[in-house]
Amino acid sequence: MSRPKSVDVVVVGGGVIGTSTAFHLAEAGVSVLLCERNELASGSTSKAAGGVRANFSDEFNVALGSRSLELFAKFKDRPGYEIDLHRPGYLFALTKKSDEELFEASTKIHHKFGIRSEMLSPEDAKRISPLLNIDDVLACSFTPDDGHCTPEAVVMGYANGAKRHGAVVLTNTEVLEIELKGNEIRSVTTSIGKVETKAIINCAGAWSPKIGELVGLNLPVTPFRRELVVTKSLGHGFADLPREMPMTIDYSSSLYWHREGNGLLMGFSDKSNPAGYETPKDPEFLAKLGEIASHRAPRLLDVGIGRGWVGLYEVTPDHNAILGEYSKISRFFYATGFSGHGFLQGPAIGEILRDLYLGREPFVSINALTAERFERPNSLRPEYNIV
Ligand SMILES: Cc1cc2nc3c(=O)[nH]c(=O)nc-3n(C[C@H](O)[C@H](O)[C@H](O)COP(=O)(O)OP(=O)(O)OC[C@H]3O[C@@H](n4cnc5c(N)ncnc54)[C@H](O)[C@@H]3O)c2cc1C
Image (cartoon, rainbow, N blue to C red; front, side):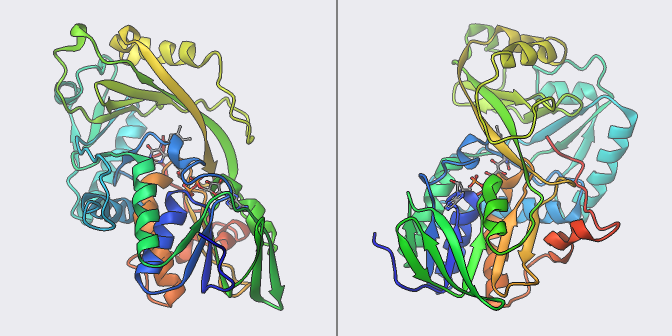
């Protein structure tokens, strides 16, 4: 595909957020160029565990998760791609009274949105997630319609769908500069030349602050390394496990696991990692994971480790997304800082950015999520149900 001379919108970044946005805009008849400096899904999206859920504490995230689940469920028809969606639920194991209270409050919010959600006794939780050690578990939060699917497939589905609707998707194309006249956008300079446009959508994930800087917008997004592993096929010793098990998360330690093919995918968020863009594997990762598992899910110590990888969370001070249109530059939009839950929000965010661009009211208010909230007192919008 060659570089167009002029388009309505340039989308920066070919992860789940950028490709979903390109799809929704192109489907609505907008001319779109998506620029990805590497390959599609090569940023955080292909590193995600694939978890999709509406189990959040903030109403905004509940709405986004719920809407995205609806769109994931119909993905085969629109945009038309197989994403291997499984919906065995999400199960959070809680070992502190304060966490139990937090999730009890979240459950009430879920019900307001019509989401199936319940607090389970440890014994009931163990019946659906038999690897869980419940010795010190007080209660569990269970949302049976959550699940997981394949991140790369979602990106490919959206990118192909966008192209079918006329979008131009260019890989190995880096956005380098943005030309402004007053507070309006004139053009974008990429590594393969200039493209005239009046609108830009910054979907560059962990690298979005650099795109923000091009127009003087401060986006407080910090990259943190996160690592996970996929096990080999589970042997005879695991024949008792049900074919479908919920994504199970030890809320205190963040240890998580879900079925992945004939094995498991498992990981935890190592909060001792310093901020930074480097993604070397931690030689101690398996030992640290093993230490947590030895208490929370000792049978995980008997699985064979297959492969593993490291990616970046793009974290904001309140663990919530930064979403909106820059107040100082007309038609400069941004959607970033998803703080470990951006994959599952991709479908809904694409719809929202389409509506913002078209001047329509999005299905959920995003006014509290703009970048300006970090400059105002008492305007943070914390999400507590994070992994
Ligand atoms: C180990 C791990 C597990 C995770 N598990 C989950 C999970 O289970 N569920 C969940 O919802 N989320 C999960 N996440 C978080 C999720 O992966 C991210 O929030 C999400 O993928 C962000 O998508 P994005 O499109 O914003 O960013 P990215 O996928 O990072 O896409 C941004 C793209 O922008 C490109 N780019 C940057 N600068 C430029 C430029 N100048 N020009 C052109 N292109 C540029 C990059 O190359 C990149 O491809 C996980 C993350 C990690 C690391």
